[in-house]
Image (tube, rainbow, N blue to C red; front, top):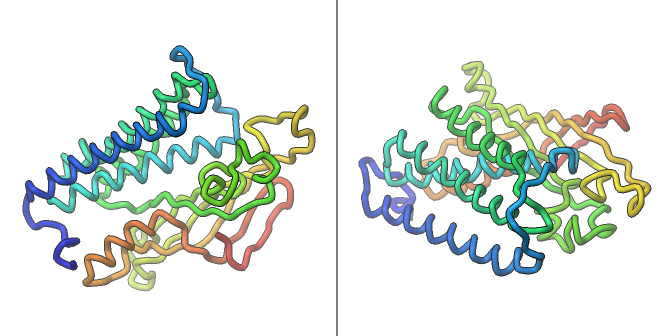
Length: 278
């Protein structure tokens, strides 16, 4: 098992081919499933664009940045497992996520419910750029983009938009989502006194949203405000281990912010301290 997860020491063509075929198949099946199980429930239309940049206090746009970053990272790291060159990892692997998200956005363009959003596309590209830029500049990810979620009181008030049940709320309730830029301190300061796994995280969230915009007719009592956070974090990928299986698991779970004491800053309550925030 440990040998299977160990990255190859030279170009491994069977692994490379397996990665390419599996990624193409998984991406294709996901798009077909989205078309049949999701978009089929909404009225189709001619291709159109929409400007939704003012909605959800931009939480949806930050979510697109996160998706672009993580899909690009996964695409590149799976090619690294086959020892594909760094150049090809960035060209083919990291752009995999951007290609997939572009296809989803095109689906939105043919749906009367949404429309193709250039704001979403810019955010998708920003996520890919965050990954690729760090690899080109530092040959490592010194700044990780992470996610955390807690259930809120808002989803039951508008389950069509915010989700019905934990699985849907995890993806759709922007009130419970927080996105983090997690900075690895040792990578920037190179000090023997700073653990290599210790990060400083800056987060963004929003609260009080029952709809994309202020809908005073349907939801007259919305109290929408932005939230900013400061916290410590752990870069799981920098924890030393000889187990390639654990390294792979650490890479997967490094997409999520580790719960830590946190300071919150917002325009409604000022400064608020959380003993543990997730």
